[in-house]
Image (cartoon, rainbow, N blue to C red):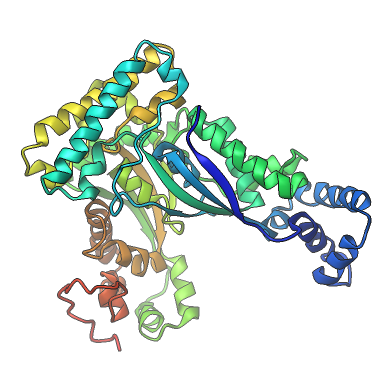
Length: 452
């Protein structure tokens, strides 16, 4: 039924005992190490009973930091990009994913049973094969992998390594049940829970507040059924992107009410003064950006950006009416002989989603046929530290072209709003005074005179 493989490849020894001991150490004079030894010396049945009581009265009552004490690392193979998009939404889960900028899409694609059983099952496979043929044809013609991949459906297979603590995995489990995700995504999360529960069963029981959504740091919800605030915002602002010919609109900024904080910014960057670097976290910028799902996959993993994304289902309501309005096309495709076919296939995949849902396929399963070229809107908050670090990383000439364009547009608007940051909201080689990449791209760095 499913091709994915989930392996738990990293976890502390005796994780549940560790969590219980750490929780008890908050109330006892003994250290966690001593308490853990005492617990492990108990008969197993007695120890498990005590651990359950401790976890129920700590993690189960909303003390999330108890669940933060143990991390689980999963290696997941041959899952769809739709599922990895979901896994990457919680800001405190950590991921390393196979890059389709660097690796080819030779793992193929996944089609869920609900689509295979529908009257459009054969048609879906035919369209997918045509799309993969187009990918191969553009690659053979010299189009880079990072641009050729835009038309690939979200059901394209990939690999990912995901690490998270018990609190974040509980958040992920809850999200999977309360959003419209694919049957594959549900099964991947179910398998992750089962593997983690084998090592620490009580952490993942519903003991009360460990599944209380108000207690988690909220994640952007790409697969929510509806996002009313984003719908209302876009009604007012969507035309501004066309009018100003920009991928980024600045919604606002907030700078500490000091007459001159420029010296502090200079000290933070030039002298690497961490006290001053921490102060940069209190400078704020709000943006609304338009981007493809390809780009969002990178943006959502930028964990220090606070993001709220438009529901993909709201985006698809627009796209079904006008597929080209919700289409992102790489410049290399625009300049090539493939533009007409690219546009046609994008529209076919969008219409296929619509036909599948009308045929009774659940939206969570139908959404996997959507191409990465679908345009969505992302509401992003960054602070002053991000302005010099993550913006600099994404503005690098070696960064993927779309997120580079967005980062540079953000940088331009930050410089206008806060001139004291202007010298440092640059590609990293200029701000850091050295190139962090293996191969220096030769970017014409007018090295900042303040950088040593």
